[in-house]
Image (cartoon, rainbow, N blue to C red; front, side):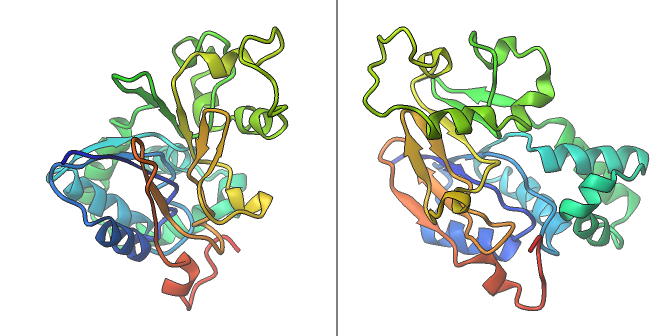
Length: 242
């Protein structure tokens, strides 16, 4: 049986990712779509990227670019420090790369450069880290970085009148473009949830791994959900982004 599984934000929690994949009972037939933010948070940020590079040799993997991945890639390329990045997990990635050779860093830069800003599958499902603002879809997004920084898509569905019909003139046009939309970026723990949340045709798979939450995965067809333990319990000596 072939499955396509979307996986939410990881934030350097490699121990939790390995645990999650074990609970999924991963097989070589499975396609994995990672929704971004592989780094910035727990101490295994760089090791997580190494693991994902190797995982892609065994499984079909699609790696979506997250905002934290973009910031870490920029630092690896130039060495320039973004103060906002440092305050939101960047220091953990700097520390994680201290003992990496130039060859290993180059391999990681190659990984970062090949990430996708979004992916649309054959069933017109969209996979994107954050969201999009253009009513014609992500392909028409004027500022590409919006795809891994936007929060308005999620804020919009949170405020959506659940009784509004799709043919209503005021129904959000962005929600009519794709069959289903799978995102991360904004932890559902902010609204008191600990599992992936579905509103309209949007699935938010970010369950707060950077903080006190878990890494989550979902079978995009059956909607079966798997989760790791809370990531902070697997890194008891660390604070993550808390």
